[in-house]
Image (cartoon, rainbow, N blue to C red):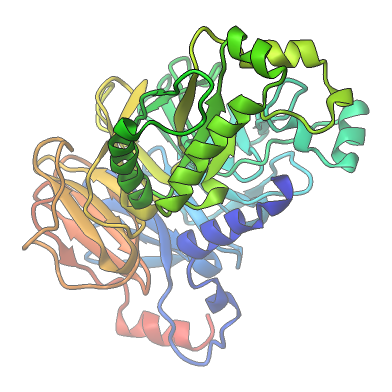
Length: 474
């Protein structure tokens, strides 16, 4: 599992940083900068950042822009300002830069993680405090304006589910007392205030804190695909025909949502165990359910049978294993695991939150992030960002994908008007206040609203002189 995770970086880098090839492009002509992140302070101030170390700033609501000198040519994946002066930008290979003068100058800071890992998200809580997250369990915190960063990355311990997948080198490092980091990608972090924060990432990762990050707890996704237990007749391993309808209906939903994984576990009664003398009947029941789902088009790599009978009985305590398969009923339980790839999380207040993700995923929370429910976006394209406006909620994504909600996120629709016709990838959205909001994306895309998200206008960040200077190889 840990060896097959290269796709994760490719996915995040490809979707969040499409156009990294521009970093190697010839500068003989003007190439618009792909923008990956935006941070707004009040109605007038916005910073937008992206590929090749690009950072742009406006302090007059987009009438004029400055391209700031970031001091790096690495892609910037996230930028966050606590106020008009103090902010951070983070990105490839774990670089961090910090400013105390609104971006006029930047200093490089060091996160104590070796080897360096990509950082995908950062949130400036105030001038001194910030949290950042990234790949390979990366989670970092500063309480002194970045003079020092603390490594709070997720690590693997003996009771961790992936401990058994460690390589020999990782096991040896663990035995020497060295840190072994969890192979998780965390894409975004958001703090509503100094105490309440949330993290999202791959495999449905959602964490929340209510004590400033001292402790984090996992949130629960309330999925909409559920199976009832499959009851089998005594001694039988064929699925009763009257249960086929339930399986057909659930399979249709599973096909639409590829991020869902299925876990099957089968049980048998003590009487059946005495008659057969082994646990293979339970295996046959689990395999029957698996074969049914595969027959409906569910790929086998999404299905896992829990506790199958081991082929090598010498490696297990047979009596202990058999007890795991015993129950007073003959049945199979089917668990659906929610594993969406999540990009962005934001909260409007202590209760109402939104999450956007791959495959058109939109989720809503009304209890501070303890639980999340899916809402329909009517799209399977990636949604990269969400935003709370006073009159409309917005969600944006790839190829100009836009969805809006007029009922606090309960339902979403494609806007019939209010947006200019653009087809660039929309990477991020942020509101400086309830009326003034921004969307940024590929090819220097900047959209602005001044009426709480009801209508949006396209803003150019290039004047003729700036474009000419950039084309000259700035």
